[in-house]
Length: 226
Image 1 (tube, rainbow, N blue to C red):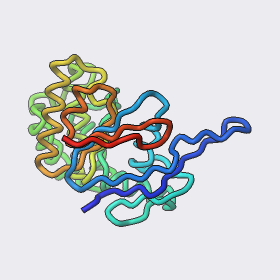
Image 2: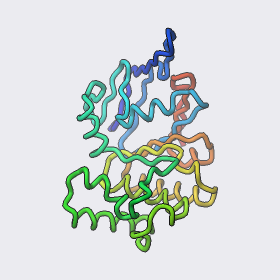
Image 3: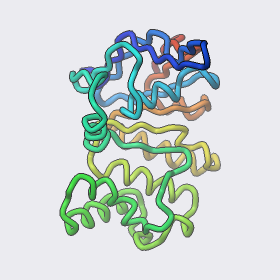
Image 4: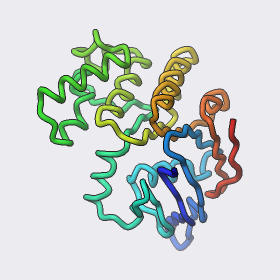
């Protein structure tokens, strides 16, 4: 079953009097429980695709179906609700709040979901333990290594139990050994049933994914499968 379908998705930006097609009629389908790497040169449309996948932006035209629901024309509040309840984000720069502890960073989406404090704290501890961070709950991001910060980011992404994890260059700020650990972790999460779509420019990182979608000039150039 397809968790996500793009049907003739266009995203056009105005640059003065010129139209720039960031996405140029993209058709794509991502099956529930699959693991994808999105690749392509700078300016190929990868980031625009991820923004639309994550309901951070809307297409200019075309339809985006998430779990069979057309989310293309939803209002901002409805898009925010989908992001909160169904999508977890993992960024290259971690995007942790420096003033908050590991536990509080993981709890953030649970706060917005309205979870009771005791249940939220319990869930955060469970996620921290799963990521090997059980002894770091009261540390702040500045006291962690890059790999530990990315593990916190993944724990936060998983806290609300989303169907989809979007990972944007998740190993970009890590050394190769730590990057390998993060990719093994994402692979394990995929085996547990999570759908993962990851942007990367590194072929060795993309090799962890079951499928690779190559972008060029705003269009899908080709798709490869392991």
